[in-house]
Length: 268
Image (cartoon, rainbow, N blue to C red; front, side):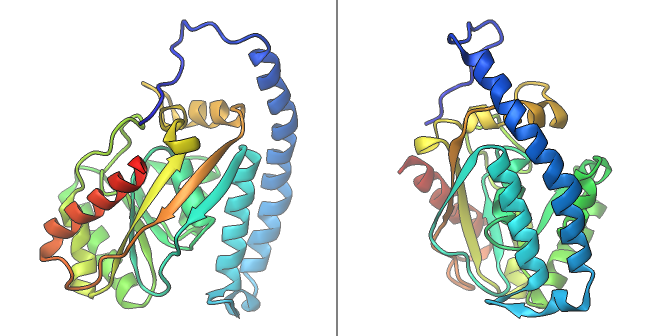
């Protein structure tokens, strides 16, 4: 399904280095402008009382955050292609996990508070942005932390807000979709809200999954800089058939069904 990235010893095609340098020359100034001009403007606007005004089924604040996220992804060369429609209202969105760009791409389509590892909170700029984007931070491997996360998810869903999760619990190099942890679906079951699977596919027919994904021992910053110089490519966001409350028997069956629908979308 996915083409592996070139290994460290691979010989780059003629002109590849020059093309990458040109992309950096164009994109770095755009990124700086997006961070130093667009971002403060968005932050200013979302602090105003008018940020809560309804606008096409969402608030002005949500629309602004979505626009900023979409702009960031376009700077990285992603052409966003949405298939299907995200549910309105309280929904648990579950997606396959490839890289940090997953959150920004999903935010460009539908505002949702993500469950993410606590380490992200300490990342410069990105951590602060994640907090502003309604992220719920989780300390992996900590049972007490997971209990708090589930409580917060349930509270948000019952309040009519949406939550996004990556049920695999981490990235897998883009080459496979791992088992879904069923416990994370408990909040949707108890809140009585639908679960909508989302398939994230990079490149034509997913041929760039392994390119976008974190490479072996690659840090966030290394991945960020590498992707900034990558050729432009499509990013498909497939909003799949939702699993309604009571449609599947229990959280384990919901997890299995959501994973199956994502796998089928990735293979189509």
